[in-house]
Length: 325
Ligand SMILES: Cc1cc2nc3c(=O)[nH]c(=O)nc-3n(C[C@H](O)[C@H](O)[C@H](O)COP(=O)(O)O)c2cc1C
Image (cartoon, rainbow, N blue to C red; front, side, top):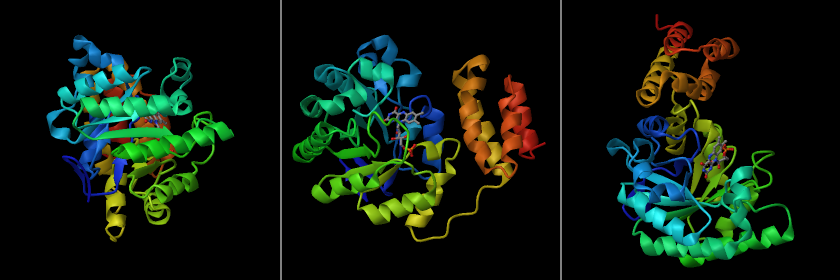
């Protein structure tokens, strides 16, 4: 059992923050299948300082999904700390500070992964956030900014500060910022952090795409937990599978086609409840691509689902491909 203040995790894994994916429907499905903690996708700190924006449903947690964390991004320690306070006020259980995002527009504005080059900025942001909120404060970083010696030094300074200052959890994506999502995540580096700073709670991220990999990383690297990111898109069942393996049980049977189809319909309906049809259909495509991976006729199913342009067509295609009609 991992305990972060009032937030307790009965399992050593969480669902990653995924911008453009981890809205309420994806989060609540993850929770239903045994994920002990989820996050919003990264949100710009300034959103929290505008009452009108923060009052929008999409920026607020729902009553039935706790615990849930708010992840924030910014370029000013004071503003990030203030934003953290606001997100806690609207009901999030903890804060995750993002120093990992590699998107060019984020780097250009000196936010996210850019800050891996500024250990003192990261430290100040954490300390000021800690002062403002009496909830757990996590940090998400990458394995370094790039492959240079300076980046290596900055990385270890950031980890050392995190351990010294009492960061509640350090999440490390085992790729550098310039690497973005290319290549394999470096789990040796993540394991090394835990070895050097045993008292720091370290969660590793990168290429945890199936339950067997999650288990292997938990057993072989010494990390306190793993983060499931792309592996959970259209695949909330991964959480019950990791749960079973971690408890020494057999991996549960894959859901039947009908179970998959019913869940897809439910997921789509949740999305339609807060989006106009012309937005909901394209938005759901990326989830359908994930869901279709379990279908024995994956390619045919994917093509049928991707061709749908209306809500009615999506429902009909799911019913047809998953044997619900
Ligand atoms: C589409 C997409 C969106 C992401 N959004 C976020 C985000 O908002 N915040 C964050 O910390 N990481 C984000 N990440 C990074 C993931 O949380 C994770 O660290 C990364 O994908 C590595 O894990 P994986 O190889 O298992 O997918 C995102 C990744 C992807 C692919």
